[in-house]
Image (cartoon, rainbow, N blue to C red; front, top):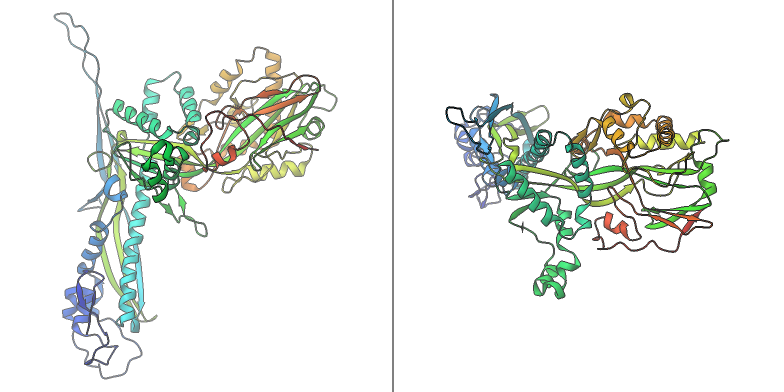
Length: 628
């Protein structure tokens, strides 16, 4: 025999049935062959008294079947000791449990600090408060199996195949545990949400929405976005009484965008370091004291490509309003072609929804309810068992089986495992901070409100959250009052039946449940009650006609939408970029606000994650493509 590599122990051992001068039988294993694979139980294999008879297949001796602790220990070691996964070493490290079937319980104590107050003699001092929260959970039993044909198992090729399958099992289990760490971090309670509800009882909703809008696509809009985000997170966690963060979990595309910019690779601004970065590529292991850990893509859906859990699709809404008096056309940005297109006044009147044909309409409202992009998020925290949580595991078992009917033998590996975040105070999640590609919903294709086929196409595409939006983008509405301004944002809902049309809206990790209050607050900015009524009546009618209420039957936040691979839709409409050309007056240009901010030629590259936004947006191009 010749020396080889043992897939379990890692040492130099004798390969069974390797070519030698003294052995010609390649189907009958010897004791050393059994021992190399099955450990000490191989010594218990008795010689086969019928070994001189001819058999079609080789079967495993009964003494080798069943649980095998020797193999189990070695596979356990490969998983927990030899792993280089940062998810189960830095973020939520492995922690062995002797009895994983039991209920897991842990307590979180909160000791509130306060200022000392003046205390007169013969009176009691104010007592500091403390709280205890109790949580519980269970591990999950999981497993995988490998198989090999009987006559193949002891050949040199079979041993190499066995080695590869063991490696496959170890890698698959580690990938499963890595996914569980991702899910544990995403599903962990948001301590920021608890703080908002406790201390900002009156205005936390509006502040939270504003924070989300400001952070939407923040990386492309600000060169120092990650610096601001990291320092802001450190300050937040410190105020919560947490520990200094030590890791930042994000998509690899985000680190590429952070490093491979002209400002950071230019010799003029960075010297030799900039040239070195440009030559070597975006290697980024640390940033502002945090270890950069790149999130993984997992094959979660059969027939679909692996996907990153921190990359998700988000749909947002915009509106554009202007007077129809002397109007020639309105120019809107088309992100699919990275240009501005003009929509003529006659086309607007033909396609728009109107109460009746005889009314005098003085303004037009254009709504884009399904502008969809891929967005990236980050998770920042302090990892480790003492600070954040652990990946609990135990009761592992590698069991050997023999299937004589099908001529195969194999091994099944079963184990209990569960990744749990014990202290969410040391964790902060920020969603949708960077663009990563345009999906649809921001071209100039309009819904023909008088055409049932066009409306049906819009409804079908809008209500399918499982794929990129690919329907008409603009819903046109003619209004009787002359509007050139509306509050931003407006809520897209059925104002006549608010309790049945929408009960909640989702912006990232925040559920807006008191949407009626939010809508009323915005509408109070309109002083004319008659105009307000006509506006809400028109929006409600279109909302009902296009079955937009179906959207709110499946309201999901970032966590639920990412897990189910569905888009999140937020029907808070912000004012978008538009240009209104009239026959007599100079063009009226309206600057966009909200999620995307201002639109300009070239911004498509920014929202595809391939460019950084200029410090000042260029003017709208003079060349306009007109729609007939």
